[in-house]
Length: 90
Image 1 (cartoon, rainbow, N blue to C red):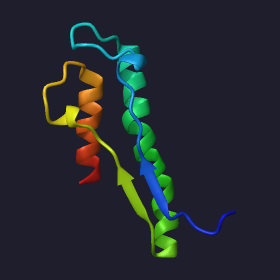
Image 2: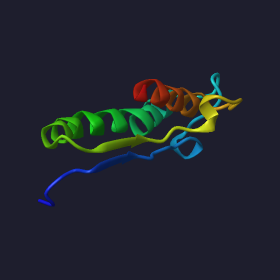
Image 3: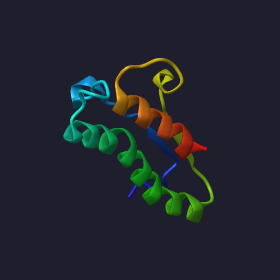
Image 4: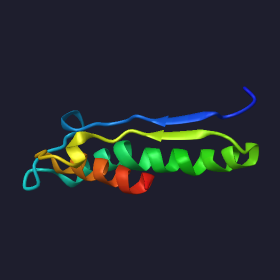
């Protein structure tokens, strides 16, 4: 509709508001919610935009992680998904 897809900016993140908690306290539902929001959404958005960008031979993808990935952070789902964003980007 707009002619091209120039930028995909993945800047998502939920922790406590998604039910994140320390390892022994987190529920499976909260973990799944955080993974879906923080990681799965970014991966699937990239999956769908990359073919378009390749066809037009241009475009940029910007993935935002967090310092929580490389520092002490007590909430397991946020830290794990932000670490995974770094690995995904690489």
